[in-house]
Amino acid sequence: MKQRGFTLIEVMISVVIVGILLAIAIPNYSDYVKRGARTEAKTALLDIANKQEQFYVDNHQYTATLSNLGVASTSETGLYTISVATASSDTEFTVTATAASGIALKDDECKTFTITQTGAKGYTGSGPCW
Image (cartoon, rainbow, N blue to C red; front, side, top):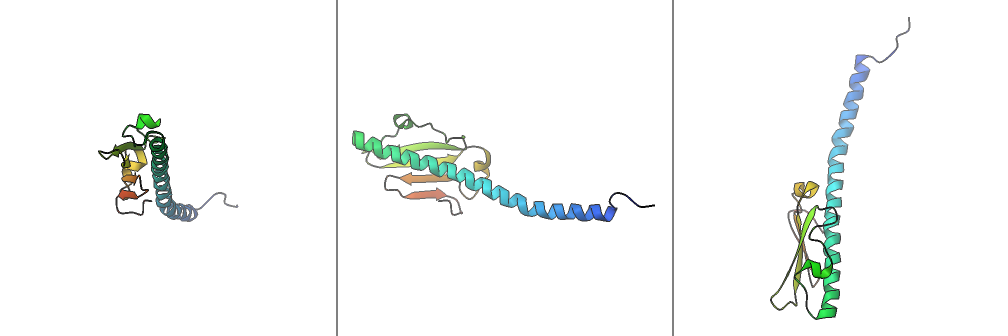
């Protein structure tokens, strides 16, 4: 009589192979998702910096109010909180994106991103964020 099905050893080898593949795939996927969240913050900052420059052309000063730029105080999916600060003379600004929720809060390498009127980019954390 011919046996049908898998032996216990065949099943165990399959489980080990799947485990090895998952051990490799999950950390790589997690890093990919974090980089995607960082892109959202950088895109929001660059957009606001461009709008600040247009506001400066029109009004000869920068604004500390996001609503004057037609921008929300959160990034597109809400992962980051956006804020803007100006110097007392309104000739300088700094836009900041701070991790607010989801995967962005779990990203210990890049919690906060900044950009200034000169285009200087900064961040808090240990990783290469920009």
